Image (cartoon, rainbow, N blue to C red; front, side):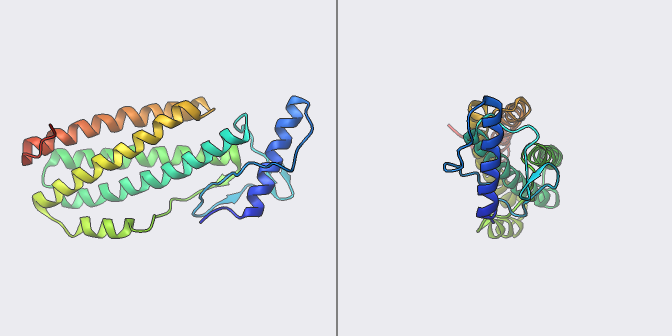
Length: 214
């Protein structure tokens, strides 16, 4: 569910005003940025308000960069939550203890990263965001949960490899476009951690099931 269009417009005008005040330029309310938090449950804060919209305590230096950071973090929160849901099924279904241990690490690491991004959305943009499930994701989880034994492990590892590849692709964009150093550091960690997990999953697929990438 998206943020209310009136909230988006008010937030963009407020952010433009802050930037104009800092630069000495007049505010231009006729060209607001199209901020889109893609929020499942999104609200604005209650301090330092202008017409009910919280002024970001440490926003990105331009509306377009702010738009990218909000979109990236809300999207990655959803993406992480899907990985967590998959990993929780893995804890119940995995045959190999090594794979089960990786799934525990995925849950711990990505849960912590979700909390970090939620905190930054609130601190920087006055947005409270909860993960949302994309259409079709629940069906994919149900299909995964219906499998067992080697069939489950092969399907899970192949799915997680693709899922991680998607996260790495988005995190690389973050390194180029994000303004906050903390967010860029998180993106570096996502790339490093998930690339290592992809390599390990590919090794297990080859070793355990003769599913080897050339």
